[in-house]
Image (spheres, one colour):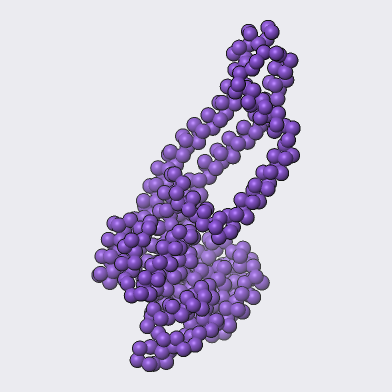
Length: 406
C-alpha cells in the first residue's frame, strides 16, 4: 500500500508533518481529516517508488508465509528480552537459509542501519510484510511496545494460517471426490461402454432407453473428443478470465458466501479474520479509522470489503464503530453487543480479539460439521452417477434371454 508524506495543521493551527499509509491520495486525505488534521500538502513518498523497484529484484513474491511467521516470532522473543532491533535482525538473518527471504532481511538491515525506522524498512517490501504488520509495528515504535506487538503479529499470522489450512482441508476431500467421479464417468463412457455397444450392435432388439441414451452419449464423445477437449480448454480459459475481472471476482466472492454448507465456512472465516485484524491493530495503538481502512484491504472478500467501506465512511461522519456496525451485513447482533460493550468501557481492541476467538472456535466447529455432511453427500453423488451408468449398461443383460435370441 502506498505511503504519503503530508504537511497539515491541527485545530489549534500547529504545523504537523509525517507519513500516512493509504490506498490512494484521496484516502490519505480522508484519513488525515478523520484524525482532525487540516491537510496543507500531500504527496506520495519517494521511498515507496524506490521500494517498488527493489521488490522484483529481491524476488520477494516467492517468500513463504511460514518464513515470515518464524522471523516475526524470533524478533518478538529477542526484542521482548531487551535486545535492540538492529542486533535482533542480525541474529535472525544468521538462522535464515539462502533465498528470497534472506535477501529481504538483508535489505531491511541495511535500511535500519542507514537510519530508517524498522516500520519504514518493512514497508519497502509490501509483498512480504502486509500493511497490517507495518502499521502495527509503526504504532509500537511510538509507544515502546514493539516486543509485545511483534508477538501479537506472530499470533495473528499463525491464527490466519491455521484457518486457511482448516478450510483447505475441509474442501480437499469433496474436490478430490468430484474429480474422481468425473474421471470415472469419462472412463466408463469412452472405454467401457463402447465394448458393450459392440456386443449389442448386431442385435435388432430395442434396447432400454437409458442404455440407448448412454450409448449415444458415448458414441458422440468417442467421435468428437477433439471438439470436447478444445471446448473444455476454452471453457477453463474463459472461466479464469471471467473470475479475474471485477464482476467475476464479485460473483466468486458472492458464491463463496452463499453456497450451501461451504458458504457458512467462508462467512465465518471472513468475519473472524476481519475482527482479528481490526482488534490486533486497535490493541497495538493504530487508530480506528486507519484500522478499518487496512481491514478493508486484507479481509479478502469483496462483499466484506463493501461493509468496511461503508463503516469507514460512517466513521468519517463522526459515528462510533459500534454504531457503524449496527446494521452491517454478516455481523450478528450478539457480536455487535459485545463490541458495543467493549467500546463503552474503552476496551474495544481486547473485546474484538475475544470476539475473534469466539468466531474462530465457531468456525472450527462448523468445519467439523460440514465435513461430516460433505463426505456422505459426495459418496451418495458418486454412487448415483456410477450406479446409473452401470445399471444402464446391464439392463440389456437382465433381458438377455429375449435380446440374444432375436
